[in-house]
Length: 174
Image (cartoon, rainbow, N blue to C red; front, side):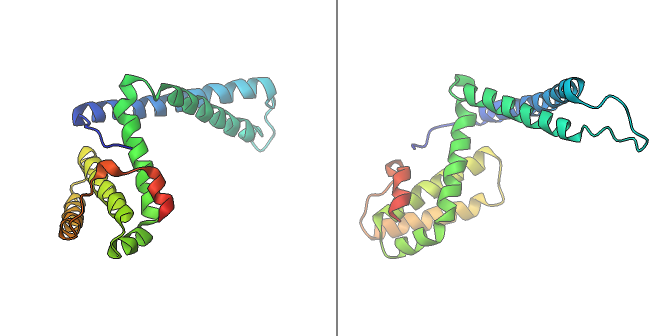
């Protein structure tokens, strides 16, 4: 995966709209599906304890609405409107994959493994981009420091390593 330029205002605007639309759709569809399921399959009379016994139908309505909303979101991921949102989402997934192996990657980098340098270069550069887009100013300084230390080590070894060399398959080699 290659790093790409993301316009911060467009990303923030589109992300906020996607999140608000998803949450609102989820809530409305959960109510609609729950009401329809209760209408079709629910208990009609209230017992003395006040419980209708339709809890499972309401839960099924929430699950159905989640499936529908996720399906719609998945179908829209290739639209130009979702370009930045989907790109950052994929980056965050890669961050999780790298983070799970980060200890091994750092050990490999200490042993001057070029694949580890490529992974760390991508990891720190992409973290810096995501933190900047999400206005995470608390930890961006640490990421910049780690990236500078990595670049100094790479330069001292006379290597030419960049984030553009990263391929997800490199994670399997560590």
